[in-house]
Amino acid sequence: MPAERTTRENLRQTTLWNKPEVSSSTTSTSKSKSKKDSIERLDTDVILCIKPEFVKLISTREKNYEYRKYKLRSSLERLWLYETAPTSAITYVMSTTEPKTPGQVRDPTGVGNDDFDAGKKVSKYGYPVTGLWRLRSPVTSKQLKETYGIAVPQGFCYLPKKLGDGEKLEDMEKVF
Image (tube, rainbow, N blue to C red; front, side, top):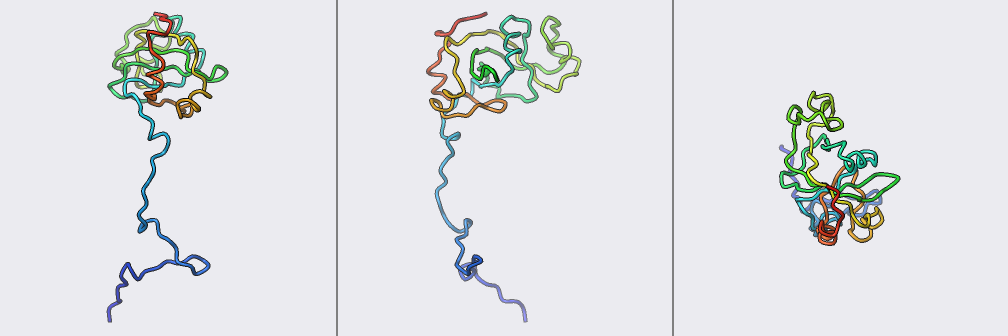
């Protein structure tokens, strides 16, 4: 005689105390979006974590490309440079264009350019520095959390629209 199938309605899983367990697969609940997902973001702007020594090299034009392992969206126009400790704040905004790949930079004047072109770096994408602005007042990690609802990114995150609307390039000091 073949085994009898139990219908789903009659199937009940119990806990250790023999009480019916509510299954998440059969319960219909509305999923609330996480805080991160509910923040409106700009596709054109990214907050990028960067060490203070590299920010200094960019500001003095000794470094004219920012190298990364990953490719950001093609709509990218600006990188908001979040300097890691001890600064721990967004201090500059860098304009950029389409990234280059190894062999395409062909500019020996910038720090790391020759190594990138020769394929000696782990990075696969070079974002050219086409302009730089200094924020009049840096945006600290505390402000990012309390005012804009975001934590300091581990690598990068797309800029909250609220931050982009509040910090205009016209109000910043143009470095170059």
